[in-house]
Image (cartoon, rainbow, N blue to C red):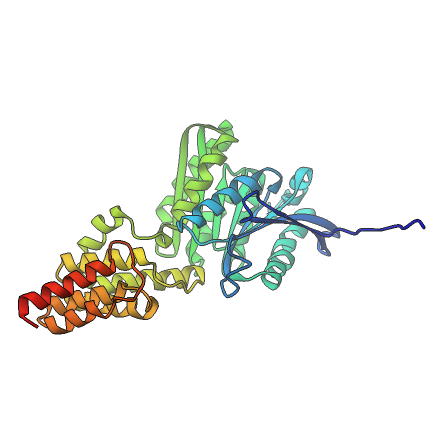
Length: 384
């Protein structure tokens, strides 16, 4: 008996060879475009296991060639906590990119298929991703030449659709170089704006970027975070590989763990209590990216060390108390609380706190042996 099996494939999931990243291919039927569009979506490594976590979105136009460099950098930066793990959504365009980015010859705003594509992204794609995936309220758009120009149109929405704009050698529409500097000061929400060119870029496009940089740089403010790169020796295409990691590093600088440079140049020079810097850092992360992340152990240790060096004992107590609440099964909070007791004239409390961590998980340099040695030293010194 002959059997006929008909398979209709709408979603294909592909795992990397090490079984961590996940790529999903979807065919999205757009009523705005009256045509299907292929999407390529990369989910974060822990998406399946960490079901309470939400993720920013990175929308990549020209995904036929831009998706992989963007997705690779997002995965890499997310792995090392230099940016939040994010959902990367690529829109495959191919030859349709020119029609997708078309604008009116008179007012130079999206027209015809360009107007439809504009609505497709804002009214269909982003709501679809929000509905079907666990998303945070922070969205970045990435575009190259024509599509880089196109993402700027969303700045003229109120509020803008995207929080971050990565413009790679934009081929600006007429008047865009005048409209952007006029519009940006009136945008109330916080915007991250990155612009890149290269010294070997197409000459006209390099000049466009250089002139736009001159107009946008003076507009830097608390609500308009602006970054610019002109890469030495980079061509129109090679600049992409250098610009994407630079953009991610700059846009998400506040998200990164406290580095040695930040510790030396910022934390140690604070005139305010160190613990407020720690709390403000994570409040900023929550406000900007919609993420309520626990404070990293690295950042607890960095700020506690600074509090010790600066002899800010009340700050040390606050940091220790936070660490005890967030990491109760580790020695982290107990160690710094005991150090607070040591330095504020309560050796017996310090000794007992050091001793009380004997069955807890060790963290970094803070071992159980270190805790017990410190308890024994206090006992010896004070004859308890």
